[in-house]
Structures are given as C-alpha cells and as structure tokens.
Image (cartoon, rainbow, N blue to C red; front, side, top):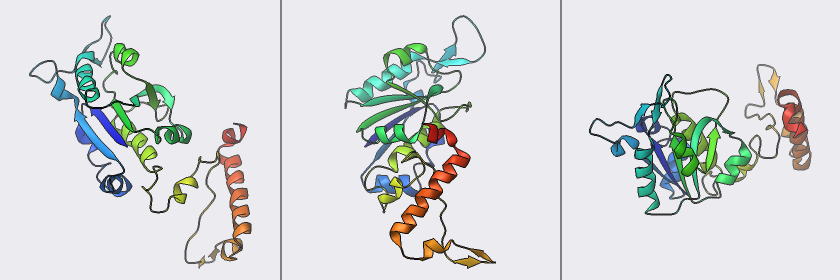
Length: 225
C-alpha cells in the first residue's frame, strides 16, 4: 500500500514513520510512505501557498493552485483509490473506516493548515474527509499520522502476530478485555485464576464477558449500535 502525504510542515511527519511498527512495515516492503512538501509547489519564490479569505475574516486559507499542481503530478504516475483531507469537520475516524482504507492500494492524504483549504479543493479533488476527534489541531499532520497508523497496523503481515490486530478494541464492536502478564501475583494482586487454568474455551468465554462488561461501563453507545 502506498501513502502520499501532502503537508506544508513535512518535518512534523518524519518521526511517526521512522520508528516501531510503521518503520518495520516499510522495511518489509508492505507499505510505502512518501511525504511531499507543498511549498515546493508554491506560487512564487517566497514559498507562498496561502492567502487571505475572500470576504474577510481572520486566518489564512491554503490556495488551490499549489495543491492542484502536486496532486496532478502524483496522478500522472498512478491512479489513486482515495484522496483524504484531514479536517475537524470530516467523518470521525473509527476502526471500521480504518479497515476499509486498509484494502486500498494508493492513497493521498492532504493535511489541512491555517483556516483550511480553498473549498474548491474539497469539491473537485477530495474523495474522503476524516477527523480524528471533535477538537482543532494546528494542522492535519498529527491526524494524518494517526490515520496512517490505524490503517497500516492491520495490513496483513505488518504485525508479527496477525491475530493481534483482530483482537484490538473496536474490531468486533467491543472494547478489549483486560490483559495480564507475569508475575501471576504481585504484592498481593493476583491474576484471575481462569487465565492460569489452560482451559482455552473457558478463557475465551471469560474474555468475551469481560469485553462486554467493560464496553457497557465505558462505552455503552457501542452496544446500542
């Protein structure tokens, strides 16, 4: 799977893709991540990619021309399954959306900045608009990293144990059950006996019950869905 991420602050994206699971996914050849500096497509020698909003108001708006130039150049080399714009008023990211995106081959992620992008970009280029929550960040770079991480980790072969991703919270509409590791007892705090029993059917039954109860307590809206 290939990600082309468009940003006017590309240095913000260097670290997330240089470590841990995202780094290993690239080393395995399962994922390509290309970060593009929008300022290289600026309208003048000063690196201008934004301008004042028509009609007045505070804040600057990302211009259509640099974005058009970069997306057109990318499209000349390959077809893209999705052009995703990170924006607070987009569809809220969830596991179902991440699962759907993980089936694609080529994806562009456009990081918003300032007061956002010229509306014509959204109307004529963008196919999906995604938010990572009901709050505003300084730019879309952190959101793009979150979205890419959520997608990449469930691509087959990325995790050493592929079943791990399938037991994450939200994959089955429930929160994950509690987990424990050694030692079995620490300062009087004990691991539930069932997890030490070796009875796998009973353990799975216990985990399901715990997942339902944890979801009921913390996210009852998921059970309503």
